Length: 80
Image (cartoon, rainbow, N blue to C red):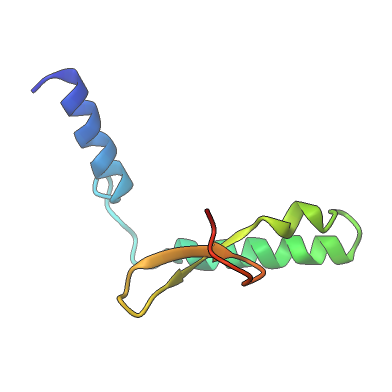
């Protein structure tokens, strides 16, 4: 196997979380991102961040097909 294919295979395994044992007690990334977004909104209310700093945040959600998707946090449209 050449180096380029090996790198691609390792990257693929890493993205799918197959290089290290997974802890079933870990929270999903979508929950972590939701907590981060909530904290950023609280920082906006306290004046520590400007609203424009949160405007382009995205949220991960699962569609009816069970696959994860990304949309703008304000719910106004799909992320690009």
